[in-house]
Length: 291
Image (cartoon, rainbow, N blue to C red):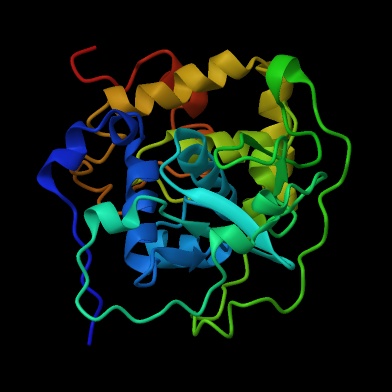
């Protein structure tokens, strides 16, 4: 029998749910659907990315990790570890779900976790999370080489390697997909081609194809542009202009003779037929209609 989950209409006015971005809200709903009848699930970011954002290539495992961290910070889920595997649960599950003849969970409970045992030290979800304090709503930050944190300070401790085995296979979950090259770009330092590609993937509209590979030629072009325009704010403004343009955001069809056009990363770093630099034209608002 398929599992049925309930979302009450008034959940949309809940202060914690209202604090979520659209992407994090979708992840939260997906985790509710993934949870077993006692509100527990294996918290594997790669699996959650595949199940939640399978056709959205711009969403990386790193984005899902950020989302899980945000849900934990708000207290919408609890993260806990048993042995080498991380889990999540919904501590108010029985207040919101009415399940006839629930199937007992095969996953360990929060009470069996390192949190309750009061252990100290660093706990990792596939090398992506470190824990600052062991409590039910601990704050998490993502580790990575060169990742910019508060005041541009970075953690220098390399992430732990993925733990083999675990409970994912035992729980009957789908095989995990292999992350693309772009999965690690969010942790790249600025300015770098990886950081620029990650910003493009994150800030441009959905009609813009995601960058998944940085070839030698793409790197050279990106490095040239970053030498000329090294300021992060310059590129943030450039990508904001995509949303101001109906043409670049895909809200109007391409002109006759350009039906196959899409504003790709390569197009952005190239020159137009008139010799003008596309990125400069976008930044300066020349693709805003009426200008």
